[in-house]
Length: 167
Image: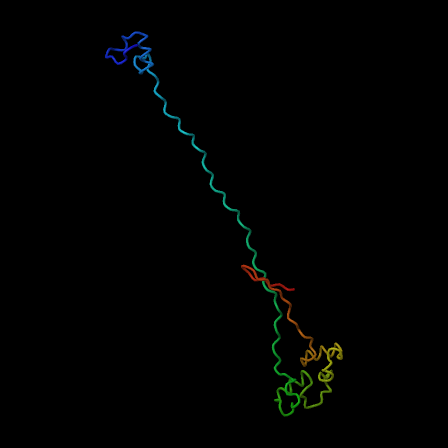
């Protein structure tokens, strides 16, 4: 009904034309329409917390040291059983003296002064000798000594250590 594209001044238009043209093309409006507000920005997300570090493992205990084995006694200077059948001609004077003093063998004089004859009954020493004779002959002649067995050991193999312990 109205021509809204005329070059006349909209203030001179009738109220009906102003209403029509304002509604149709946005001209002749009594108030300028408010500008379209800018879009609302999206909300800012909360900050991301730092990652939780993994739990600290407990410290690894040090490996258990192996059990100590008593030291092996030093070897005897002479084996009084070696060559005993020919001791008079085959042994040195030093061996004769040592074996006589420590076991009653190789004595050039009778061994009657010794408390025990460590050769007598040696084949059955475990059952036939008294405890006193066993102790004396073991200490002085290295005969009649109870066998020493090494300690029994168990070993576990595993990563990263080898663990040994007494059985």
